[in-house]
Image (tube, rainbow, N blue to C red; front, side, top):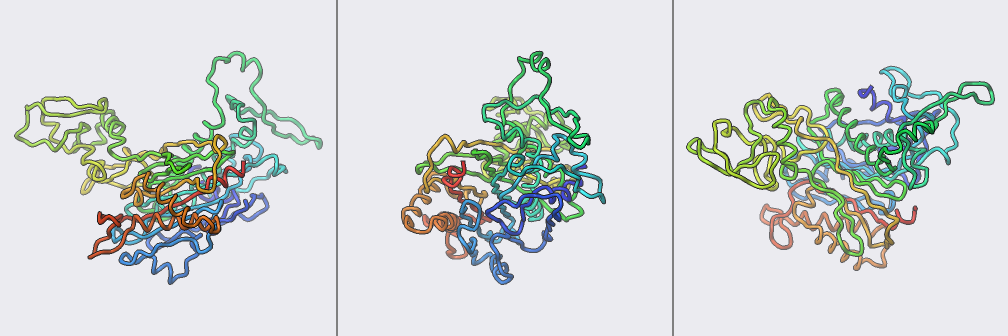
Length: 505
């Protein structure tokens, strides 16, 4: 079933991946499902909303000039979102970042709750099922979506996820439409039950009901789950389903490498930020930065990765140890007492070194140089199903989780003005700049362009952030204004005006 998701997903929503429209395109059962073409990962491909000509596309890949790209018509993206990007300084052949900005309309799953088998039929069967006539106003919801995908070891995985992850999010939300339309304080039902009735024509008709009263009384002590938690779960499941699809179709569609994924969803007055990797998002409200994600790196997830190695030592291939030492142990240090820590420890202690401790550490290095199995510098993301330790048959994927961390921001709790934004960026931005510096740049650009067209201001901020972190080329080295090393990585940035979301409440 999961391997058929790609074909089915394109028929679930009316969103187009090559043009980001302001108005939702409501899905209809008699409508031809949109085709989602995945370009070859071996040719440069940039987000469709940049509308690049072939010549501009070619120029965008020049690692020596590093031209900053931004949408040609500021305000074209949903909410008037600003966007800018730049290619790396030769770190990889192409820009491995990808981006997506969409507005998605979600309909109930054919009036049913859990009929996934009919939604994802076997290959060769039609994905369009006969559906009852539904009132679009009463039976659908919509969400705004922004996604940044930082590819590594190729751009194939990032391109694939940028084209399809929002379809998975949509599919996960289809079971929740009726629940999300209820008052905010209403707990979610424990289970979704169907009963069969007859309509006016005498035809059997399925209808959702609440669990019987005696069931509710019997389990009156059960934990209550509210809609916000359901949306978080939907995002977590969408990431997992996307990762499964990449695993299933990686050969067919030549999906190389993996990618970090940072996604923001505005739904029913709240912004949900889901992050798997080392990209980050912050909200700047009244000039102050508010973190909306965390980085998942070998250092921040040391204990989780070590614990998995402890539980399943066979994954270490008899080449690695799940213990951590301040440095590699040398042969002459056998039987000496040295500093170490394991998955249960945040502090350090001493242990007597044995032969098994001579193996390479599962996590080695410090800061941005830390690596899992001396190979990869992130611990969460999509893809990487074929990634192995160099010159071995040891797979690294078991230690790399596709589960995102999700944080929620309730727009209704605050008053937002035109200077309040959310900044989403790949690690090429955050590697050389702090949250406070980003907030300062945002406020200074706004102050300089206070009378400009509002939508253009956000594009100007995005371009300024990319410019500041890209730096300038001096003597074959990219440098910041301070003279320190600038970012040599791909950089992609969204600047999202929160006042637009507040007005939509």
